[in-house]
Image 1 (cartoon, rainbow, N blue to C red):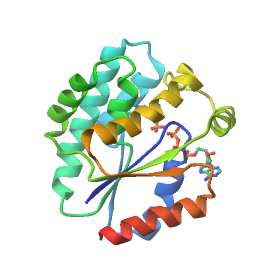
Image 2: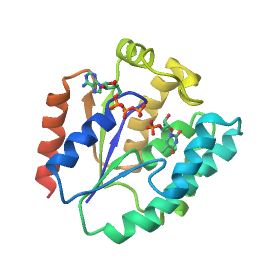
Image 3: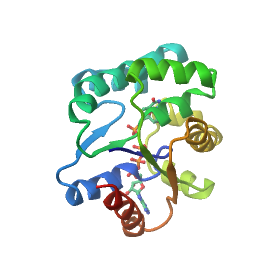
Length: 190
Ligand SMILES: Nc1ncnc2c1ncn2[C@@H]1O[C@H](COP(=O)(O)OP(=O)(O)OP(=O)(O)O)[C@@H](O)[C@H]1O
Ligand SMILES: Cc1cn([C@H]2C[C@H](O)[C@@H](COP(=O)(O)O)O2)c(=O)[nH]c1=O
């Protein structure tokens, strides 16, 4: 079972992943981008260098291809829980590129391995503004609130269009309440 936690920047994904690590000790936890050695290097480029949108897209795809080949495929019989996935890959890029093109590129990069279930932590504008104001912004966060709120809707649209089952969870619920909901669903799968 391959499960992804999704949500725009500051939605609370890593906070939840840290809790799940203690609760599902046998699961394999991954993160996109930057889980592999190669991925660590490309994070630096994507977030801090001035590169074109097309180059950025291909770096995310290359990172995803590495993670699928080296981590997801060898562990596919286990519970895999990922901080971001192809859903982010498509949702962030579809502001600039055609949806069907992105699906095809991502199918090529992953050999068609997409998550079986997705949680999307959803932020309201006020909470997003407040959380973003508390951190330094990388190249993607610098695109602003409106861009990020569009991406959130793109994530939902992407799950619908790819027919991937998902659950929306308001990101302004307490950390414990979100954890409870996620844990309950995952426990039903394993
Ligand atoms: N449910 C919550 N209620 C209040 N604050 C939260 C909640 N979840 C996370 N936070 C806080 O919001 C901030 C962003 O959380 P976190 O780093 O987990 O988000 P993220 O989705 O992994 O972000 P990014 O994608 O930008 O890495 C942190 O300061 C965290 O402590
Ligand atoms: C996988 C992926 C991510 N992004 C964006 C989303 C965020 O702005 C960053 C990742 O930051 P995090 O703190 O590590 O969550 O990258 C993207 O645009 N395309 C992708 O494929």
